[in-house]
Image: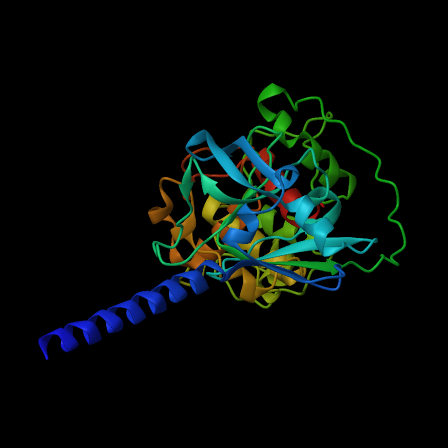
Amino acid sequence: MKGKSTKVLTILLAIILILSQSIVFADDTVPVITITGEGVETELSLSLDELKAMPEEAQINDTYIYNSKGGQKSVVVKGVSLTYLLEEAGVVEGEAEVGFTASDDYPINPQPLTDVMNEELQYVVAYEINGLAIDEDDNPDNDEVIIYRKVKQEGEFGTVFKLVININVSKVEASTEEPEDEVVPINFTDITEPYLFADEAIKALASKGIVNGMGNNKYAPEKEFSRAEFSKIMVLSLGYAPVAYQGGFSDISEEDWEADYVQAAVDAGIFQGRGNGIFDPDGIITRQEIAAVAGRAAVTAGIVSQEKLNKFVMEKSLYLDKDLVPEWAENEIAWLEAQGIFTDFIGESFGPTLNVDRAQAAVVVYKTLFQE
C-alpha cells in the first residue's frame, strides 16, 4: 500500500512539474511590444524571446550616451533596431508619426517617422541594459523593454522612453494652411555670449511684435520682466486682443497701461493674481509663475490637452529641488521639463522662486508656443 501511495505521489509531482513548465513557457511568449496603426501593413506582437531571436543584422549592442540633470550618462544597450521592426511591419509610405504607449500611462511625445527610420539616429527596442534584464516597474515577474535613441546634441532630452508596450504608426494629413509671411529678423547689439542661448527666440518674438527692444538696438536681456509686462506678452503670443478692465484687482486701475492686457490674460485663464485681491503688476515674475502661465497657454493654444498635461508630475522630475515646486505649478513645470524648454538656462535645480530675466522669458515663450 505504501509503495502504491509513493507511486501516486510521484505521478502527481510529475504532473505539477509539467504544468509549471507549461506556465513558464507561456510567460516567455507573452508579448512585450506590439506595433500597430494605419501606417503599417502588418501588425506585429513580439515576445522577449522573439526579439532576442531576430537575425543578427537586426540586433544592436552599443553604448548609448544621454544627458540628464545629473550630467552625461552612458549605458550599454542590447536590443533590436526599431527601424528593422517597422520595415518588418511594412511601413506605408507618406507622412506619419510614431507614437509610444507606456504601461504606466506616462505621456510620451510622438516621433516623426522619418526620424525613426533614420538609421543614424539608431532607435532601439532594448531588452538588456548593461548586461541586465530591464525592470523599471519593480516587478521581476514581467518582461519589459525601453526604447532609446542616439543623442547627437549636448543637453538633448526626450531620448529615453521607458515601459513602452505599444508602438503606433499613424498617418499625418498634409497641411492645407497658407504659408506664413516671411519673418524679417531683428538684430539687437547686446545679445552677447552669456545670452546667445536666447538669440533665436528673441529675434523671432521681436519680428512678430511680441517683445520690444529698449531703444538704440538694445534688448536688455539681463533685465527682468514684471508680471504686467509678461501678461501683455502672453496675450500677444496667443493672438488675443486686450479686454476692457473690470476692476478685479485693488492694485490696478483702468488708467494703467497694463489693465486691459491683464484682464485678457485672466479671462483666458492663463494668469492669476497673487492673492488678497492684488495682481502685483510691478512684481518680477518667477520661474514657477512663468512655467504655470506658459503651460496654461499651451493648453489654450491646443498644443497639449489639459488631460495629458495633468499626467506630468514632479515625482518623475530630474530636478534636485523638485520637492520645492508648489502643487499649483507642478504639472506645468513637469510638462515643460519633459519638452526640454528649460535646458538652455536651468541646470540640476529648478529654483522655482528665482526671478526670470528677459532672455529666459523669451526662450520659454518661443519654445513653448512657436518652435516646431
